[in-house]
Length: 176
Image (cartoon, rainbow, N blue to C red; front, side, top):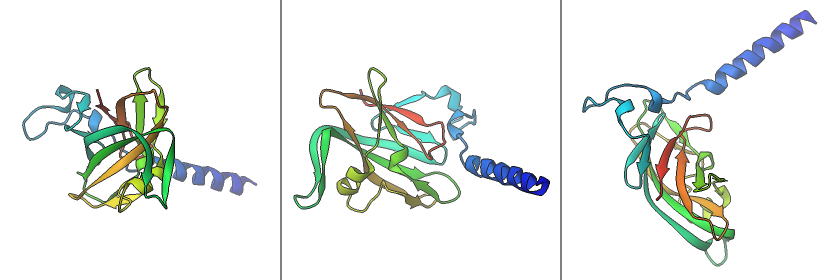
């Protein structure tokens, strides 16, 4: 029994260590960039068209389009429960090893703070090559894809919280 308990504790410890591996949040460090400016001097919230970093990814939101009722073709597609908001994002791997981008790790918020999760099923129809579905991006490479949010018809998104992994701190991008 003692041997089983010891093995269970070791296994639990290894799982806990594995969950935190690779999920560093470089956005909160105070490293200086090429211009000499520290990360602490940079704005914490980016705007559409401005690069924003979380961990090993640099995100640039290209556009946001809401009031979309359906994505896909007439034969295959997804119908919104309310309205789809299609957010086009460029994701660049700024790390030194491959990193998986998952659209479902991204979040959107209304002005009142209500959180909305990404609709992975609709994103499959909104992207030609599944750019936002479990896509491994090698160092220096980048992809552009659409992350889809299904929100109520009268709601307007105010900001996004973009993550390089489900456990990262995230970076905020204003949509206003």
